[in-house]
Image (tube, rainbow, N blue to C red; front, side, top):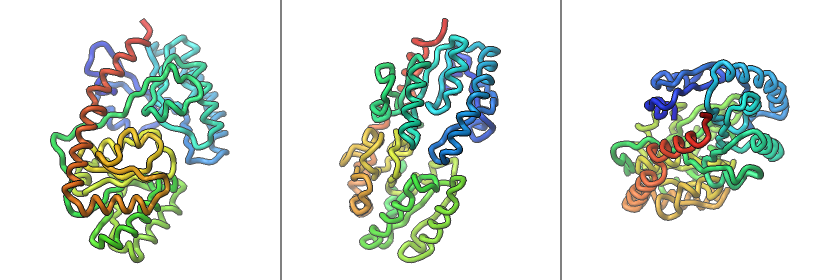
Length: 347
C-alpha cells in the first residue's frame, strides 16, 4: 500500500511504527516516510497481565499519537490493526477521519468485543480482510468493506515440483498447529514413505518449549529424516518452487490466510481446515481441499491424494493461480483502497 500510494502525487504517506524491524527495511524502498512513536501492541499470545499492562501503556500512547498528528496534520489515519485503540482517540481529538483495518481477533472474546465497540464509536469506516472477519463484528458491520490481502504474482506458475514435498509455513507456537502438521505427516508416511515436509518459520518468544517438543518429535521415528526445518525466511519463492503443495492447519480461527493466497499464486494446491477466512481462498476440490477443523486423518488422506496424483495436483495449481489473478491481485486492491481513501479523507 505504501509503495503504491507513494507513486501518486495525490498522496504523501507517513507510517507510524512502534520500533525498528523488518517493516522499516521494506519502507526504505518506498517514498513513505516512517516515524517511531513507541506505541504498545496487543497480542493474544500473551497472558492477561500483559493485556492489562497494555491498557495502562495506551493512555500514554494516546497523548504521544495526538502530538504526532497535531504536528503532521494528516488528512486521514489508516489504523492498520484493530487492537491498538490509542490512535483512535488521539486522531479523534483532532477531528481527523479514521479507518480501522480489522485483521485479527484477540483470543479473549470479551476483549475483542470491547475493542470492536471502541472502534465503532470513534472510527469513521472499517476494512476487514475477509467476509468471515466482517461477520465476526458485533458493531460497525454496515460501515465495513471487505478488502482481501493481495499477493504479488510470479511471472509464471512454479509448482508443483512432483517430488512429494509438503510445504508448511508457520510460526512455532501452539496456536499455529505445527504439531498437527506432524501428525498428518506421520499418517502420510504410512502410504507414501518417500514424502517429505519442509517447514519455514521461526520460534515465537515464550514458545521455546513448543519448539523443543517439535525438535524431539522430528528426531524420532517415523519422522526422523522426513522433516527439514528451514527457520525464518524472508524470501519464500525458492521454497514454493520445490514443493508439491501447502499444508495449513492452524488451531485458531485465522481471519484470512495470506500464505494460502501466495501458494495459489505459485500454482500450489492447499489443504486447510474449513474455518475462519480460509474457505474464501481455498475452494474444496477446485484449488485444494478443505477438511473439518481438527480432522487430521482427513487432511492426511487429501495430502496423499495430491502427492500421488500429479496431474490432479497440477490442475488444482492452475485453478489456484486463476483464482488469485481474478480476486487477490494487487492492482485490484490498490484501486479499492484509493477509492475508499478518497471517500473519507479530509479536504
